[in-house]
Image (cartoon, rainbow, N blue to C red; front, side, top):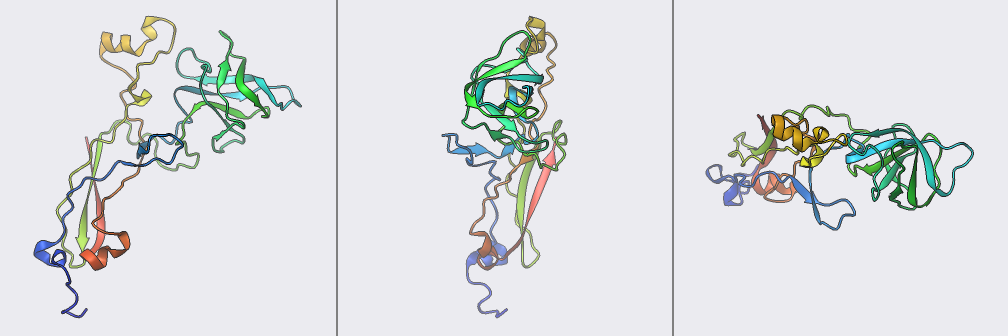
Length: 251
């Protein structure tokens, strides 16, 4: 490079090179229909439903795809009491094994689910679905059926992230502040219950033994939003930044 034009600003000189001072952002503009404009980038992308939700298989004699509002179901999978679809829950559907969760058309909520035996569910509108398809109650909007990571890796960890810059002259910047611990407890911190008695209640278990199973990390996907001093495609020209190192520590 021409020595008279290589350095054009003070930030490019070795003794005054840019040092990051902001932590990595763990939030971004929301990509969902929620009216809240921002959302966390720490997500659970492997569970099909949110705490309190569940799944069931459409069990309806063929050929009777509807449209109708009441459907037979089998193989209910609900982790928490009352162990069935709850009135008001939104409903999604997986139309083929291994597929994504998509909304029913039109969008519906649960209006009735007989107890104690869960054999049918009634929706707020008539829908057309097929026997054998999987219904998802209170679906996880971040579910990713193609996620290839280790869903259990962060379960027992409090991880933090930082970054630093490597410049064209092979020097490094100072390390930016580390993020908060990337931890969201399972059940989103709510005390839920697995049965009708007090002994089935998470809160009772916490009082009696101080041990609760949901104090594990539900996060298995983290989007790191690195604040940059200029646009990504101008970092080399503006600041002589050649690389960004992502740093990680756990406890």
